[in-house]
Amino acid sequence: MIRRVLATTVKELLQLRRDWRTALALLGMPIVLLMIYGYALSFDVTDIRLGVVDHSRTQASRRLVEAFLKSGYFVQKAVIDDVRPLDDLFTAETIQAALVIPADFASRTSARRPTSILFVLDGSDSQTANTVLGYARQIVASQTGNLYGIEVQAAYQAVPLVWYNPDLKSSIFLVPGLLAFILMVSSVIATALAVVREKERGTMESLRATPIRAIELLVGKTLPYLFVGSVSAAGSLFLAWALFDVPIRGSLLWLAVVTLLFLAGGLGWGIFISTLAETQQLAFQLGLLSSMLPTLLLSGFIFPISSMPRALQIFTLIVPARYYISALRSIVLKGVGPEMWWPQATALIIYASIVLLLATIRMVRNL
Image 1 (cartoon, rainbow, N blue to C red):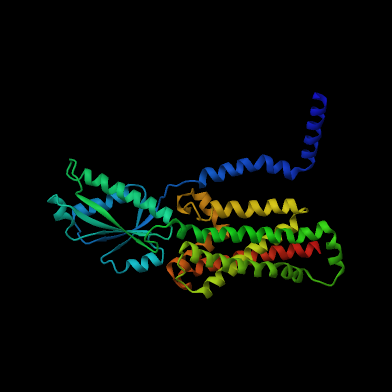
Image 2 (cartoon, one colour):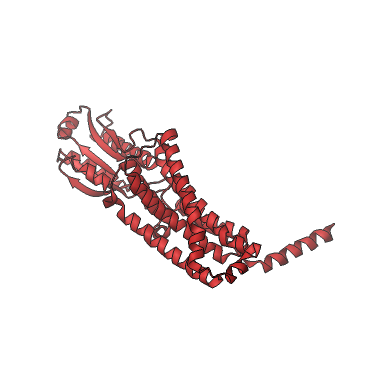
């Protein structure tokens, strides 16, 4: 019995040594996952872009603003005299939160009379908004207790005002990210198996004997999945609106354009993987790992990119879902036009162009 177990063990080790890809995946994947999860999985939110509207302009109001900035969570990005420009600042994503201090703030607090300050939030990302609101309440509570060197009850309080998602529903925040996640994974895996299937069935040799060119084969393999992905995206958005009350405030035309750009990049990446892999199993694994983990962890879908280490923030620049989710939330939740999300669309065009070019080059070599 022991000899049979040892013989089987040795045989498996020999096979593993021959299959260096599997060995590398088994040895390297835990390290990669540990690094990604360890750095990206953080619910802390830092570098929150803060706008300040100080109608009081007193030492007491400046002390409150300094408390926000010294907390380590907020970075002052705008100081304005009126609340009217806040709409443009939030739409352009210049700020994520705004502190509005009333003119009678100092007089009421010095008289120990209750007063309120207004804390405005971008609620399109409900998880981040809830965290930021918690920070604001904590800072205000600490300042209330230390305002006069003694404990005072309710000297002033922060009244939250949430834009784009007043009820802070998690579904409104999650559904756009889920749409990006589903489209990316499904499009990459679908086309990753396309060319490999030809190799395993032996029909690749028949294709080489035909006059079909690589670019024609690439387009022929991509178009059906582009159509299926578009239908899937439309159905998902309809269900998001019908079942989860996700508002679609922007143009459906622009939404379709951005979605097609995102799908083109995902399908191109899948085709590129299919030209590298020799089996459907390997193509499936490569497609799943290269699409699921980056989209889930490094796109801003769940965890804020601003809270990640600088090196990881730079790495997220090559994750296409980062740009699609940002553009999707801008169109669906904020209803803004391309003047606000054109950098994201440009990034998607660049990504799609690069991966489709690589896929074409590899396809030419295969044929």
